[in-house]
Amino acid sequence: MYVILIYDIKTDEKSPRIHRNIFKICKKYLTNVQKSVFEGELSRAEELKLKMELKPFIRKDKDSIVIFKSRSNKWLDKEFWAMEDDKTSNII
Amino acid sequence: MKETFYITKSGTLRRKDNNIVFENSDGTEVFLKSEKMDELYLFGEIDLNTRLLNFLSQMGITLNVFNYYGYYSGSYYPRESKVSGYLLVEQVKTQIDLPRRMKIAKEIVCSAARNIYRNLRYYNKREVDLSVAMSEIEYFISKIDEMENINSLMGIEGNIRKIYYDQWTKIIKQDVEFEKRVKRPPDNMVNTLISFLNSMMYTTVLSEIYKTQLNPTVSFLHEPGNKRFSLALDIAEIFKPLIVDRMIFSMLNKKQITKSHFIDKSRGLELTDVGLKILLGEYENRLKKVLKHKGLKREVSYRYLIRLECYKLMKSVIGEKRLRRF
Image 1: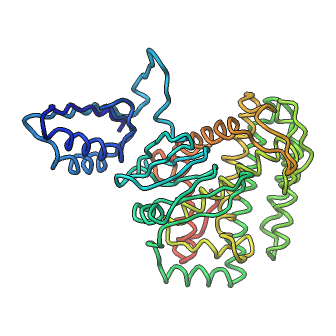
Image 2: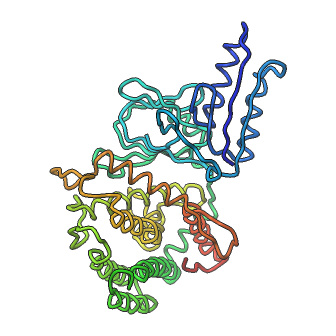
Image 3: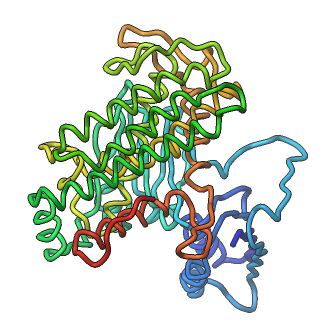
């Protein structure tokens, strides 16, 4: 399935460490499109793996992670309203 | 579906944060998705270290390297995890048993020829009349079964290809010169495209073979030689008309690729960076394309179809099921 993952980390003395770790983990599975926005194709197993990896770092009462799922990126119209950049391309 | 990454720029490839990062020569970093990666193609001049290679092995990623001229140089692949002594023994036994080897080789040639025939049938009457070539190919296909040794089989295959290539200028609407297949170095647009895409096909097949227990050096149609994975050549033969040739026809006819994407160098005609990127993007799309598999009754991608072909070959090698043409 095609997912868009966004997160918010509450800023306090512990937040830089959490932010750093979550960013690093997400980057392995998804493309970083904007500061705290990720995008990409994930299988169910990969999604669970990602969730398990993130678990130790998230503070359930303070941080939030939202994941939007779509069956395929065919069902997702993506538009660029300002600068266009193709970060999700696999050809560098 | 795991993903394939292509790097056409030059720079450094490193392991960082348990991930793979590509650092451009101007210092900008691009993170690749290590958990989603399956294959990595390098076309630029790239520095890398053993730490990266260790990481690639750990993640089960195959690294394919192409040289400055866009020719395949080699692959780095993780320590073989899918090994089967039994299958290797059976594979070798089949290879040295001429009647059994011939059976498989014939199926390969026949599949390739049928796919060639299909391509011609598609363009026949659509733009031009190719019926003469089609009937000639049909004649040669009927001869395949009579062949008694590999050389004469290869001869048939050569004849079919010659007839096929002769039709190309009729199929391609763009004004191209393509008289015959020329390699080392390819001298015109079409030859460059064929050479490049064939080597892409070859590496794709090779990576799929690595995912099975087959040994890529023991082949049936081609002589199993040294220093090359000839089984990949065998299987690529079947898929070349299906993926590579069709892709060349449609890209040239739609003018996605034109003369402006090539530069004339002393070593023949070469692709420009823009051309390379267009080609890789299209190739990736083709492999991702799905078709309905009649036997499995579900949709499979072309890439997976290659793997299924490997499984079929395995079955016929251990004598469980006769190899049937695709």
